[in-house]
Amino acid sequence: MALVTMKKLLDDAMARGGAFGAFSVGNMEMIKGAVKAAEETGTDIVLQIAEVRMDYSPLHLMGPMMVQAAKEADVNIAVHLDHGQTMETVEKALALGFTSIMLDGSRLPFEENIALTKKAVAAARAHGATVEAELGLVGGSEDGKSDMGIRCTDPDDALTFVKATGIDALAVAIGNAHGDYPVAPHLAMDVLSQIREKVEMPLVLHGGSGISDADFQEAIRRGIRKVNIATASFKQLTARAEGYLRSDGSHNFFDLSEAMMQGTYENVKRHIKVFNAA
Image (cartoon, rainbow, N blue to C red; front, side, top):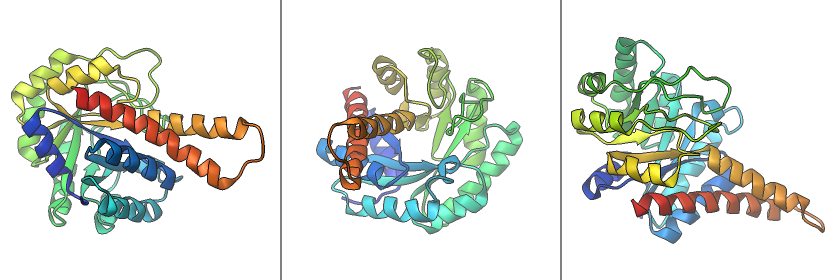
């Protein structure tokens, strides 16, 4: 198949009333595992990386691997910058061939978020790329180092924001959070439905790791078209690597690499099946 814009996947998801997974990656093994799961299930996905992870996974190294993996995959794959923090990073991602970007202004005042998002839209359109933005506060952070709390997206504000910015997808806050949940989250499905009634646009659920399968599927039925998964993949990769290193006998890099790939593959495939079942 091909490297595609995320808008193509969003349009496909809207047409069938379903959702696709957007899987964060941090090294070559995670890319390989995610693509393997997508190809085995015949499911289009997004490969993405958040800016806060780039101290460990530099964009100039990860980006070309992600883009090339998408080009050579047997399914359609979009490559997305998740939670970009600066226009500089957005421009770098676009120059590397990313087909979708997000410049996260969700912690800014409403009007400042609109202004920042419009800059991202202008940059992305010059490259034919898709734009995602966030409104409200999703709890936690991608790197687990901060938490500004959770503030549900206001449906009326969502309509104003979408009209003002010209984005392609809106990430909403409905009680979801990045990272590990200390207890199972209670998603405000009524708020999600209200947003969907106001905004005829694909909606995105961040902080997917730890949400129940039933809640995933209910959220998809209520308008979620893209679901982000990060922490669960990193944890499964780590568990597989630990298991290998604790096993009897000698160890080597190549089998360790295979273990990390397998951990990512298992998590991505499981979530693909859950999303497809909705």
